[in-house]
Image 1 (cartoon, rainbow, N blue to C red):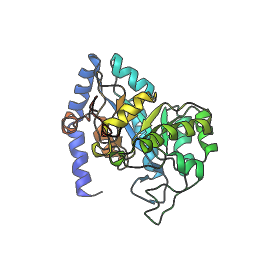
Image 2 (cartoon, helix red, strand yellow):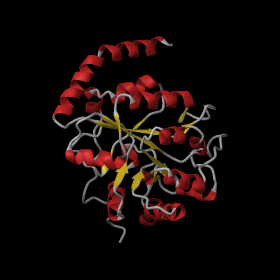
Image 3 (tube, rainbow, N blue to C red):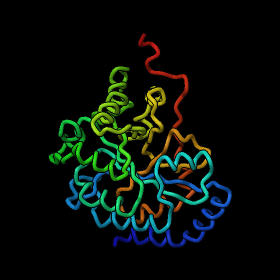
Length: 284
């Protein structure tokens, strides 16, 4: 263990009692935080920075289940509206890597842990590598439609993650935006034979978001959109916009985040779509 990780562990243990007391107070008044975590690929080949080793994933899931309510995104949204009386965690995946069906999804299904699995439509339907993998020497296998159907049958929610994994902050053409956010959703729903109700932005940082995309998601009938730049989901927040944090890394990192440290929350400014602004205002 490195000295840095050792010191982080000491600090986490030292603040444990204060975090427990803080969460207890928030729970008593229906203000317990909800953390939404995102994984990408669970495998033991360390193919890229967003691959989590199998043992680390198993350890994280067992630790989370022993300490939090493990809830769906639908339940997350309900608690934001009605108040959350226990700290909770929701699990999500992005992209749609085939290896997730070897250990990760079977574990979640066996443990009855809700999960929303966001996939890019083009790689899944065409069997092609993900756009971000084509820039490397690692052309990793996407899920098949049959795998997604089996997941859905077992209770895993399938969500949309665009058609080609673009940076939505760079999309200025309305037709392209519609294809990536709406048409891709409809193609995915037709392929798996189930409705697709939620959308996760690729990359998911403030610079990758636009008010036009948020507005189109509402108009297209999505139940929620998800970003990925950190931040907790607190009762009273807009339930349409769920904030997430990447779960890749050590268990200590997950412990530190999900145990709710208000210092983290103060450092993350929640991105809010401008209701009447559109980069396409002059398009007509």
